Length: 213
Image 1 (cartoon, one colour):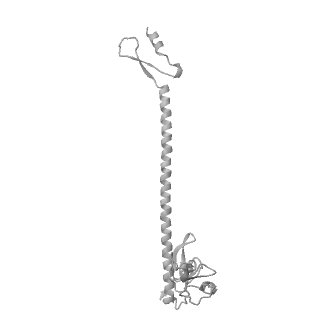
Image 2 (image 1 turned 90 degrees about the horizontal axis):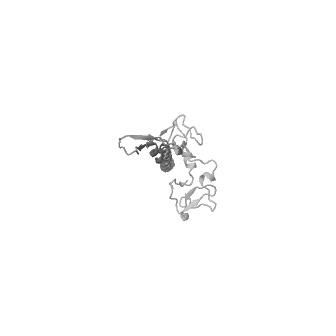
Image 3 (image 1 turned 30 degrees about the vertical axis):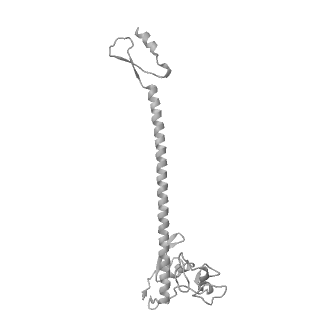
């Protein structure tokens, strides 16, 4: 017997008696769905007659029946006398619902038929979560690569900017810094004269010789 959880509500059908809720990605958001809504939202993932889950391996065309109104796939062996215009149970009966139960004393009894549906829904949920995790990992790897690429580009820009600043500072220093000039009088006094070179206003070495004489 499965006890009913009071206050539980399916995010799709808003049923107040879902009994068992499954957490899975639904339309891009993780939501709690009842077993019936999980099966309703994955019509091509299982046989609606025997509830065998196909996932990525549906039966070959010669062994399956396709519903005319939805993507549902049924085993040909499950519907041996199916008409040419086959409709799955959900499409053929407007009142049909998966995992239909009648609670007794605030509890439900899960028989073999309901157990198959519950297992099918749980298998689909597990696969959905696995696929979502794989996609999240792929997206994370892409973001990491993008971040590393952006970091490398930023480093190149900073290195280039540093080179330009250093080059500009070097040109500025070579233009305005004082230069030591040896005494040209021939007397080795050990003293040096300092001439500040400022562009075109600096004196030539000939002028220095004239002044010394």
